[in-house]
Amino acid sequence: MEIAEDDFDLLSACVEDWRPTQVEATDVIAVDRARSLASTLDLDQAIHAGDALPMLWHWIYFLDWPRTDELGSDGHPLHGHFLPPIPNRRRMFAGGRVRITEPLLIGRPAVRHTEIADTVVKRGSTGALAFVTVRHRYSQDGVLRFVEEQDHVYRTAGGSAGVFARSTDPPVAGSAEWSLQPSTHPALLFRFSALTGNAHRIHYDEPYAVCTEGFPGLVVHGPLLALYMAELIRRYAPRRAVRLFDYRFYNPVFAGDAIRVEGQGDDPVALAVTSGSGIKNAVAQAILS
Image (cartoon, rainbow, N blue to C red; front, side, top):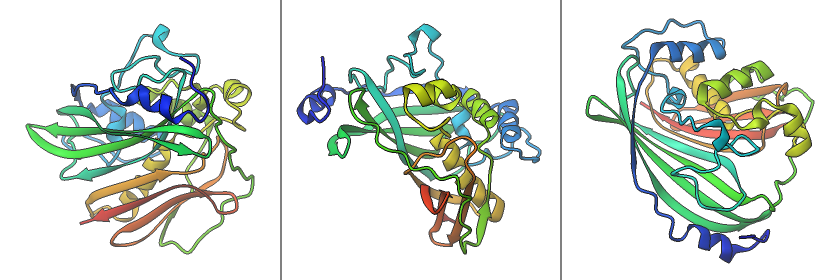
């Protein structure tokens, strides 16, 4: 079935009866995997069984590994239980939120229950878009630890991907209380792709990213930007517990770009990733206790 660039009705028809069942998954919050992420992020901290898993580090667990011949030309899975039945779909990770009661503990098994929380079709500047919110509930030792919602935006291959802002200028230093300038090195992107089971070629295959997708370079993972904002809190407020972390992605970051991660405030803490002459790449708000 062909879907026109702005065919709202046909895109709506693709998702209106789509109701995937809830899925339960179990994984061990392995020490070695957490240590691998720490090394990828150039963190020197010691990590041991029984430690609290830092916020958003659960993204390196509960991975789906489809067969290679079940991936599309872009590296994304062709089919999946929580992938909407949209022909020639293209996916963008728009953001999400995590409501935390307690963190997961490293070295122990955990359970994740996943379901679709919401679907809605809207008209955007690039055509009709389907917004899908996936909800994950994470438990350990029979106790609910936190609830995460991820917002994904889908369009068809015929839609326009838009124009991407990029600047070679260094990021402008603001007056924020907290700040970091983390790496966007291609090797880091490759390692993060491997740790998160992400085969999307825009993150590690530069000829594909530039010549096929039209990006100016390798694309930095949105989740990595969110992780950088979460790590800013952990660095500057290590004794505080995050109860809500709500993040949103705007303009992509590309490999080699200089970025600045900043945070300020207290209730909530406002965080942002910027590049170049004030380009807003991602923002977040966090409520601490």
